[in-house]
Length: 342
Image 1 (cartoon, rainbow, N blue to C red):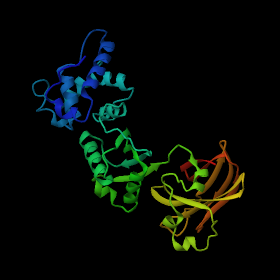
Image 2: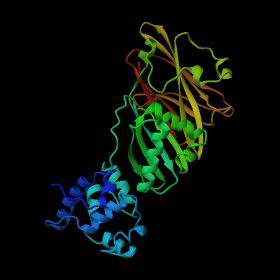
Image 3: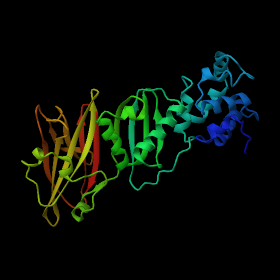
Image 4: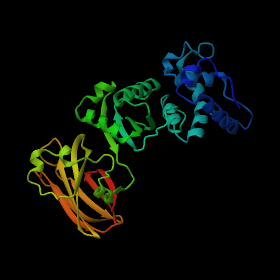
């Protein structure tokens, strides 16, 4: 049933589904206490202030009619069958500090955001050296929208520790973020230290048969756009189809950008020759021990490892129409995988 929200909820309600959150918490309170009891004015006010960007040490003036000391607020929240117990029941998460409810509510879908309706959706994983708060989230969202020049985007979830945000939106837009990160200007643009950025590969299969009809999957580019003249000149290319894609592997706090190139030729009407090549991007050599693996039915049937001063690793195999395989680039414990079908 709809409730009358405290006046302090107006700001929080612009970003959060406050009414739904209160209703759901009320139901958990009834289960906890075994009686018909709703959230009290203290709990509602505290949540609205927290989700409006007010930190606990700034809440005393706002809550002076109920509880003044911050320590008293903390005890009230943490008492058995108190607000934190109720939040844990609702979200299934743990609360170790005052910031955790923000993450738990966001991950349960209580934060408002525009629906992403882009045809090509993907995830951008961004790790920041900053503590999460509602003000930080708002700032990051608005700045990201400005950088991408798009309104349709949303935070999908957040992980604890360093602020690890999973953004959802179009892949083409988020590749701009990767470029800014590699150029070393993303932290300044966002106003927070960004430690790592990675576009999560699309789990859908790339249909290579369509490449022969000049229908290319988003994220793949012509090799002339990716490779340097020096990388192109000694290479023997087919006259058919060749496309490349940039991947960023971060190992031992160092980012390694590499280009995966796929070159297709029709050996016969029912046979396609697939050449896989990996080049460094922005560096002279591939990272030592970078692995190029080809998998079919979960088993590795091709594997090549970069040695010291390698400028290229490659492998070739034949495939039939309908064949499915995956290509994996691995560097230490870090890897990216793309799935393909002919």
